[in-house]
Length: 286
Ligand SMILES: N[C@@H](CCC(=O)N[C@@H](CS)C(=O)NCC(=O)O)C(=O)O
Image (cartoon, rainbow, N blue to C red):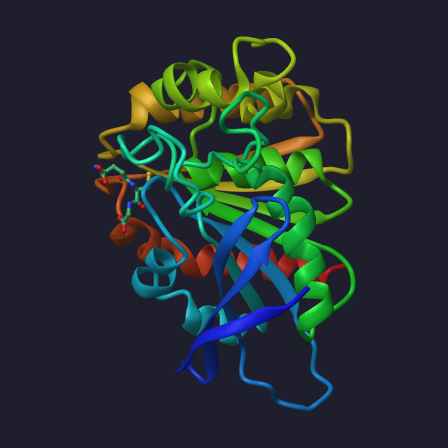
């Protein structure tokens, strides 16, 4: 797999890079960001943490706005941030709304035409990207961590729980906890990418359902949620995740309601240090 460096910028001792490559899963050119901590010895290798962004984002929003680089360098974590959907595929309707099509891949593998050829973000994040990281970067063999925001929080929890052999640590900022009942999933992305097979197809990507059915090794999921988030009760519904975890002793959800914070990157930047520490603690304990 060939990757091409797009940019490289020193930041908090390490290097914030952006790469592009031809994606075989998504059938288009994709970019991803990668932060490499300052290399303290030629042989030093790092644990890898994936960050999945929310609706409308590219690989840029998180690296520009969250300030994670300082803590990634301190915690010795390599952080990889994919784009949120395939790009430039020119599918009719893929640029008409902020919450559907480009910028809204929703971390699923679409089964319905005309989306199924390109909208395969689940396989991109669980197969193509991990392989590419293993082949090209000083990665500590073992497991990855995964976290994300909003649509990316949904992606992190659902992908993490479905792939416990690949992802060992999970956390989220303002995740869409029950997308089958959220307007973003129910009326848009799930409906059109996955069709109407609610029981089988939607459940595979619904964090609340996956917490209920999870039977892998114990997982502790850190979730931060702002109380002034406009999407809180209508779209995100964190109480569904908490309730599901109460019914399954294999999953511990630490839900922290953060007073006065909204859905923005100001909120993410405020709590990002705790998330990087959460992942470093679990990944280093391996
Ligand atoms: N009102 C927003 C809704 C989308 C939104 O809030 N996106 C969040 C993730 S769900 C985001 O990270 N936006 C980009 C940013 O804040 O940089 C819009 O229309 O753009």
